[in-house]
Image (cartoon, rainbow, N blue to C red; front, side, top):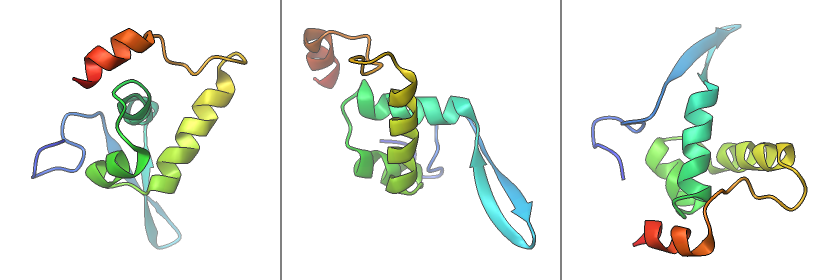
Length: 90
């Protein structure tokens, strides 16, 4: 899905945050939104997307849940019709 040299090829950034001796990656909102779109709009699976991005699938699932919770009830945050989604998947 992405280039072989970078697990985040083509997506906005992540960066390292050091807290009390341990390094922890932090992802900006733009990266999170792009990752969520790969799942919700492009129809890729959470596990597949997370693996290709080099992130934990549980973290991507949590980002997706948190984003869905922000949406009005009954909305998936997906602005494409089923027909448009089907075309995107082809």
